[in-house]
Length: 279
Image (cartoon, rainbow, N blue to C red; front, side, top):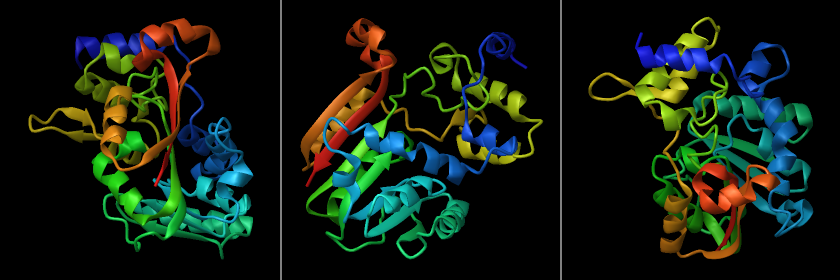
């Protein structure tokens, strides 16, 4: 084990691991899909400066891009969407979403498909609303995915985007095991991979977690493949090049009292980028 990995593991003991759905599920606190359903109101209220939840979703044909286990999609159905389709590349999420929709009584409204955001299996102009909550930072080809979103949106349709930028304190998306904030700023990805592997190796779902988060480069070193390192600057450049109109844009600080730090270093002190694009 590298010396830097040992240092990271030592520092990590000083910081509590934030609440995470993977850990909650192992502790018997409910599935990932249930957690998403519970947390979904937050994904909608992020846009309260632009529209209230009922206005956003009620009566709309909705696509949940990067839906995960489907909890958010089912919540959108509960707000009055006439149709909700959840899309994700992880195969087992589709069945988890269907099971939750049946349990909550929205099996006739919700549909779940395993597909890539770069090749959406839908006709042009067939959705009124696309939700992209905590997904832009995971897309291998974000520009192409947003072009696909534009294609399947009906004229006047909107895509609601929110994501934590890469240099957010937990922007490496390893906080199910690593509580040390900004860990990816201070340590290399091979070190992060080695430390993460050591921290989850005793868990029954360790293999699934590692496969989800890491791959290997040509030298055989672990590298994070779960995220695309989306920064605020990169996102701004992407939306400037797309045919959408920017209807709403907000960079929310980590905490209100940290606004001065956010003004100086937005990449590091922004909690969430919130954006509404309109066709």
